[in-house]
Amino acid sequence: MAGEPLPLGKLPIPLLRRFLEEVGKNHPDVVVGPGIGVDAAVIRFGETMLVFKTDPITFATDDIAWYLVTVNANDICCMGGIPEYLLVTMLLPRGSTTEQSVHDLFVSLKRACDANEVTLVGGHTEVTHGIDRPIAVGFMVGSLSQHGVVRASDAGPGDVILMSKAVPIEAVSLLAREFPHRLDIDEETLAKARNLIYDPGISVRKEALIAMSVGGVTAMHDPTEGGIATGLYELACATRCGIRIDGDAIPVIEHARAILPVFGMDPLGALASGTLLVCCRPESAQRILDAWAKAGIPGTLIGTLTARQEHTIVRQGKQQELTAFDADEVTKAFS
Image (tube, rainbow, N blue to C red):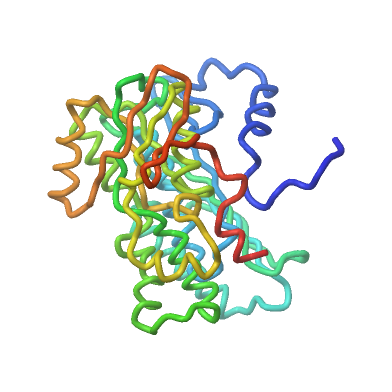
């Protein structure tokens, strides 16, 4: 097909939706198959159901293994799963890859797997041509928790939307790691920004398990590329509901104000791993927020699912249409 080149990042949602619709009917053992805003697949094997996820890391180079393991584990958790096993494909650039750099990569990979209680069971590693940075692709398998599958189709109008922590944790940490030379900030602030992937961290496993244990959860989503705005749009697509968001209620991390303006980035459109979106029954919302707070995890009620097929967000007191970002705001730093 001819046309303009596609932007850097994930495929545009309308295009991806059309391609997914052309895939055809699912196998009867596919409990949850591909879809916009669906974080992982759930497949039935006799009496057992397993959760499958694959995701690459293409922007980050520093501690790429931590991003890889955590992002894949997050999506397993969003489906009600427990991350268990990981296979990794590592493509490393010719000319800059050394024995020491590969050793460091595997040490980091083991540390990330241990932290997420995941077992590395195989994969593939090679030095290849045509790339200027490492590319890592993970394939993770999980088992279902005692709470069962979390399906976005179970959510409905009137459910409220909670978010954990603040945004955009992943983007700010990545920019501090990859582009420190472009930031006019002191060393202490730079170090804290780099450390955001560990504290408060880009894992949402803990808050996902807490929310499920409290009950009333109808859908969960891990916003990543395209930021929380795109994640919310994807959530609306997955639930087939309208959505109304109070954009002024969305917490933005402190270091974002010192770093994002340098690149002209909107915090709602930048890599958002570390924030969990939870749809739940209204009567469960405060109980989930209280349970998160008890565990030291900040949480905020930011919106509602609606019966009307409208996607709206209120920012600075003005209502506007909520849309997905054409490309993640982080791509501005790479262009």
